[in-house]
Image (tube, rainbow over all chains, first blue to last red; front, side, top):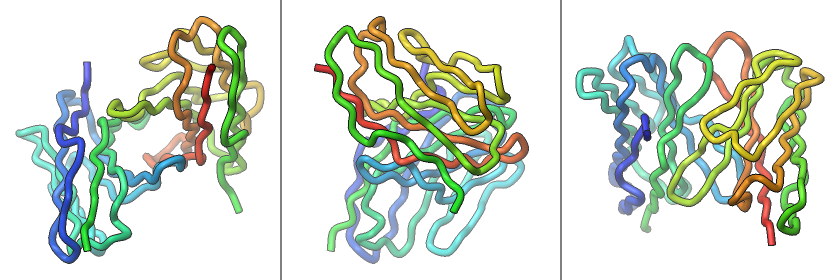
Amino acid sequence: DQQVKQNSPSLSVQEGRISILNCDYTNSMFDYFLWYKKYPAEGPTFLISISSIKDKNEDGRFTVFLNKSAKHLSLHIVPSQPGDSAVYFCAAFQGAQKLVFGQGTRLTINP
Amino acid sequence: DGGITQSPKYLFRKEGQNVTLSCEQNLNHDAMYWYRQDPGQGLRLIYYSQIVNDFQKGDIAEGYSVSREKKESFPLTVTSAQKNPTAFYLCASKRTVGYGYTFGSGTRLTVV
């Protein structure tokens, strides 16, 4: 039972344009959401997070949007840069105990 | 600098052998976690521990065992009962309060 789903395994975007990565979840008890970036053979690094009481959080080029009624969140990267090419994981917390991860989306930024 | 150290980076074992993956942190975090990454399946939780001498099974604990004798250390043993042990294994830690995970750099285990 996949509680956090990233339905797009891959995404290709031109440099300078906006990248939008999507994530859906099924558990309404999730109260905190995070996005991680991961390169091959390395551990994930934290990008940005959002509490369930908010609908938007922004940090530089990265913005996360949360739509609780739709159980959907998205990560916007603008402008996209070649260094953004990586696998992005959406993750959710329930009660600050353990993280549940999505399957990941491989983002490729083309020059 | 504080962080999490996983060793070794690459590990090869013969089928039927048990193998132990090391995870050490000097962040003074209370909670520690083991995840497994397989292509197309994201990160799946194997075991986690929120305090010394206590741990809980995650979603895919079968064929694995852990111990938490010290706050700094959370080794994972992949036993011969694990049917598909070849994977990338990630260790993480977290303070009791808050949501921030810190991940190690991972161990790639290949069983031949």
